[in-house]
Amino acid sequence: NSSSHQETDIVVIGGGPGGSTVATLTAKFGHRVLLLEREEFPRYQIGESLLPSTVHGIGRLLGISDRLRAAGFTRKNGGTFRWGSNPEPWTFSFAISPRFAGPNSFAYQVERMKFDQILLDNARECGVDVREKCTVVDVLHDGERVSGVSYVDGEGRKHTVDAGFVVDASGNKTRTSKHVGERRYSEFFRNLALFGYFEGGRRLPPPNSGNILSAAFDDGWFWYIPLTETLTSVGAVVQRGAHEKVQGDPEQALRNLIDACPLIKDYLKDATRVTDGPYGELRVRKDYSYCNTEFWKPGMVLIGDAACFVDPVFSSGVHLATYSALLAARSLNSVKAGTVGEAEAMGEFERRYRREYGVFYEFLVSFYGMHVDEHSYFWKAKDITEHPLSEFEAFVELVGGAASGESQLLSPEATAENLVGGSRSLATAAGRLWEEPGALHGTAVVANAMTESARLQAAALLGVDGAESVPLFADGLIASADGTQWIRPDEY
Ligand code: FAD
Image 1 (tube, rainbow, N blue to C red):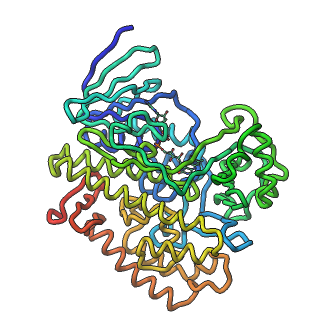
Image 2 (cartoon, protein in one colour):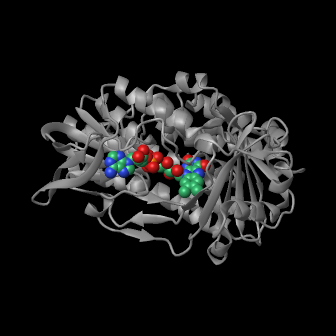
Image 3 (cartoon, helix red, strand yellow):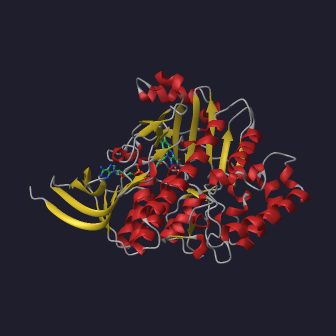
């Protein structure tokens, strides 16, 4: 077995959405980037329900909007929940928020084998040296600084790579994140998920037929994700006290759990479980939530599931992976451009990433309080995000991945004008899309107030040319107009 040694600017460990995104955004900026992926794509992965911020914001930055459109993924207008003290299902639509107004008011439900392949192919086309069947086995150091990795290729040959920077995007089973602090598990979220795929399940009535359906039951909750017209991803997330119900024969366990949740049972009445191919297996995953004590150290950064994960109920995983990839790419690009030092650039990455993770975490804790109705959840979303508009909008923006106020997570159509216009149409949109009669959003007074605050919000967030005009943190950096790097507010 011969071995080799090479040298590059950035090594990315893992070719999931986080790894592909950071690799593409840094290669486009002129870095030499090597991406090492253990599997051969397409490979199976869970995490199929996306948010508008990923589809429109990250999709546009990566240049894959057309490919995503052409892939034929199911259009997700929002979410439908049987949750909390309300015995009836309730629905939210992304269209209620001016930030997702017009063409941005949806996301996709994706087969990850196809979605991740699109991102990885695109990385290759953007100049990333992508090598599949290559497993990183160790991280190299030069004193305190991380200086590269060693990996084993598909033929069992060992290689070493010297790199200016290593990005760990190797997911929840990362073996390398331990070089950057420690993983701390949440005491609160200790769930187990058991999931599989069904053909022929029922659909919600239009326009909600592509929505994720989440249904709580005594021991946890179900996701029901329409991947194609006939294929549905179905998973039970089971709370700590009931884990023994997932032990034993998984087929029987899933059947028992479905029987315990009348809504899902009804939706699967005429469906058959897929039993062959990549969707044929019933899988169990601990979806325990965790967060690393540090997200970076000199020469190395953690993004996506390698850094942190929080309960899947609001489908935030791919959003957090791709958003952290964007933040990390910005930091690496600024360092290359010589405009900001490593510590300051990475500090900005870590603060923003922790804030976004924290917003989801805090909100999800309250969302597991089942004794209240949905209005209490909306109030909590506004409280956590300090959102200037209504409680319901605060909720939709949070669960749509826009709580950071990042203008790059919107597509260009969401200009200031569009935000204002979107808000004007809220009164009608709310009446149409929010299924509760007599919702407050339907009044003219509320619509006017929303219009004004949307104008202020848009001006503050987008500045005049689309760049951020104020830092997220008082002493922090702002994103450049094209979103590719950080700049100091006084240089704006
Ligand atoms: P991954 O997608 O895990 O990619 C990591 C890659 O690294 C893999 O391809 C792996 O092969 C590779 N790799 C690992 N080790 C090495 C190594 N040593 N060398 C080289 N390569 C390596 N998210 C959503 O957005 N929506 C959902 O509906 C959703 N549902 C979920 C349901 C459950 C039960 C769970 C547990 C999670 C769910 N998620 C969901 C979360 C989602 O799966 C992840 O957050 C997302 O896949 C993270 O992306 P990533 O790029 O960080 O990592």
